[in-house]
Image (tube, rainbow, N blue to C red; front, side, top):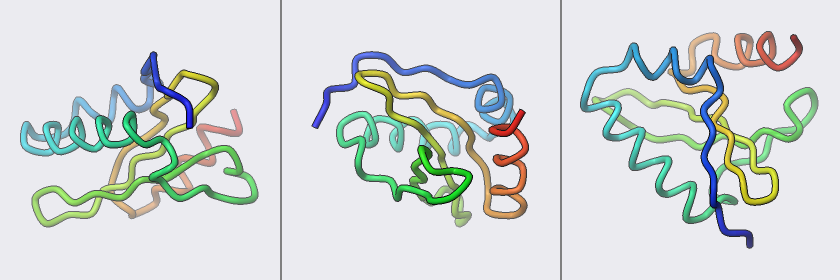
Length: 96
């Protein structure tokens, strides 16, 4: 298991994070800390999203999905949001 030394936010992730409420942002930050401690905690996707992992967490009675990619000692946060149209929008962003 590799130790995470850098955490990078994708521009899409930063925009989506700005739209969240303060409680949701604190829950997101704790989810990122858990992922940084154990990068294999998310479920690895297959197909078009083969290198992406998805970590699910709850905030304010809503389930959120957090996608990330681990490359060496770098954690790249790709996207965060609720399940509705989440994978469709993620594929659009990845395939640009």
